[in-house]
View (tube, rainbow, N blue to C red):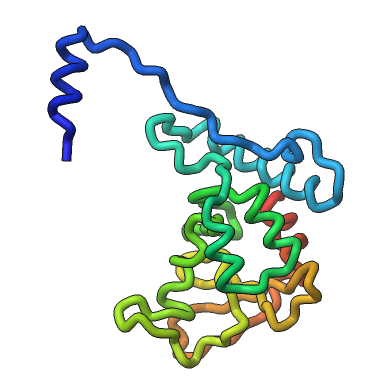
Length: 192
């Protein structure tokens, strides 16, 4: 998979430094938030920034904020509450994992680029290429903690926001409980 001709040309030129990487774009509201939700997203971004400053790999910038390219596919598949769609559109992080006393086992918040694939094993069987029958059709997996899903209950959406529920996996039956009364509240709890 190596492009040998390019490596040889680079060696022949004396291994000159490259141009570096382009810093991923950020929505201006992360730095100058005005609305209550922008302030929550900005606070969450600051928490992620501390982690990124310690762990950033510039050659593989997978934990920076990025522009979501998959919004059209997502919007075609689900009718999302405004608050969550706004988050995906303007503030969607990629490959966010958090660890804390509460989230001790690989908590992952899915960004726009991985949201569709995040449904695999919960609402969709990728091997058989069909929906999983016992999964509530209105539950959208937005995060996971050690395999335990966090879902937006789209059936309870007021078009602006929706509650976030969670359940333990591996019990044979899903027993969902409310984690937060809204996505905004859920994101705020992750920012602490």
